[in-house]
Image 1 (cartoon, rainbow, N blue to C red):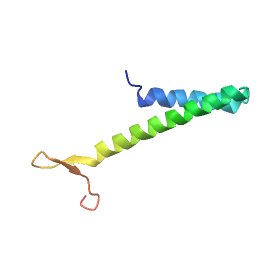
Image 2 (tube, one colour):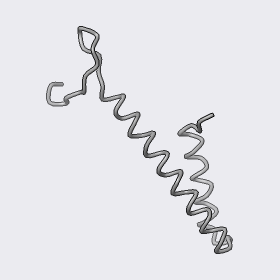
Image 3 (cartoon, rainbow, N blue to C red):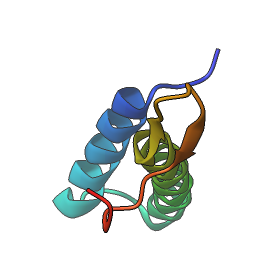
Length: 72
C-alpha cells in the first residue's frame, strides 16, 4: 500500500525533530537524513501530481485541458 502525503509529511517532521535535538549518533543521523530526503522527494512528487490535477479543468464538451490563468 502506498504511503499518503500526510503520513510522509508526519514522518518527515518527526525525523527533523530528532535531528534538531542533536541527540542522534552520526551514523543514525546520516540514515535519518537519507530517509528524510526520500520523504521530501515523495512529498514533492505528490504535490506536483496534485498541482497538475488541479490545473486541469473540465471544459463544456467534457474534455480535460490545461488551465490557462490568462483566460480566467
